[in-house]
Length: 135
Image (tube, rainbow, N blue to C red; front, side, top):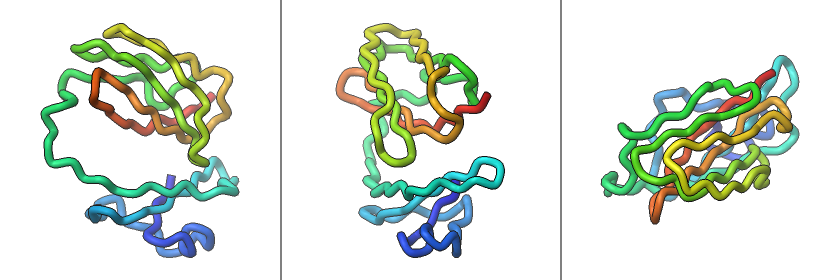
């Protein structure tokens, strides 16, 4: 996945952002995905909403594996995970799963290889992670 500051740069594949780029509140960034030599046709837009209160989701009590995932993504959290939603880089919802458990398995076997955004909901908090699906 490659990130850009403008839609034009993302579409042209120029001026990619460095991995240590500081995000700006309210700014929109754009991503493309390349697998081998094939670059995605669509561009995925993400707008930054920096949340100062990190008390909601305890990231130290959360784990997910394997990444990259071949078939099943495992999610573990100290509190009950209420739901999982998986999006492709076009922003399309490809998996929506009610969990209501602290250990959850998400079957990703039917998904195409590529990058996905996984939203893990626990109560009123959401943790977002990037996962690579690869055979």
